[in-house]
Image 1 (tube, rainbow, N blue to C red):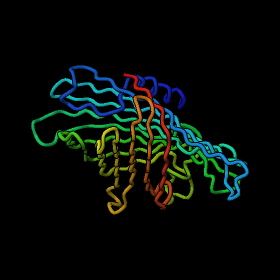
Image 2: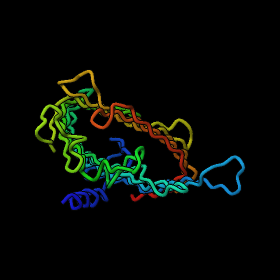
Image 3: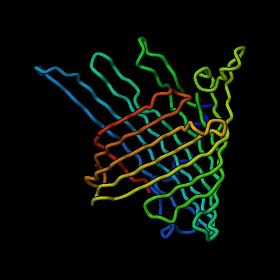
Length: 283
């Protein structure tokens, strides 16, 4: 059932969007955009006196979506997915990127500086993921295990060409199965392990895209979530990507992701990658 659900999301998203379309360029009806691509990095040594380990890293990604526009209504849908692995000499392949994020946001222009909106988001790992810090490696995630479904209602600001943001009351459900003890279990109930967790709180989502030099673009995505029962604790996901475009198909990407979710670990997680990318626009 989980695999069917994943297929439905991807099949729907093949007709969806990668980059935000300004309202001034939206036509009535559906507005499609989309990019698929591959990022690569490789290091090789032969008789290298200072030592070194051969490595090959790759990631396959898709940024797809659709915007339905019928003034004063706007309905934005998007799917971002990435899967990456790294091969290290004498170690083998390890999964390094494993994320899927789907978002649907409906808003209405009411003539204010901000517009009311409702949204639904889904995020999960795409497939099996492991903790490589222990020996032997231990599986810690799978598709929809855990899976996060969040509904929100509030106000959004998208009048600026560079930055858009929204803030609302959110209802977050966390689903788990095999790894329920890690992500959904209530530690206060010792006689059972819960596979579902429901939380209410505040969600903030902010995106920025800025071309600071010809053919060089900075993109940022920041999501914050806090629970009403613990307003001093915030879940944070902050994606940052600097892209240098070589031509229509080749680019160089520097990506930095900062992640802090106490349901996963109390430590702040950091991921950085500098890669050569090949991309293709679908629309």
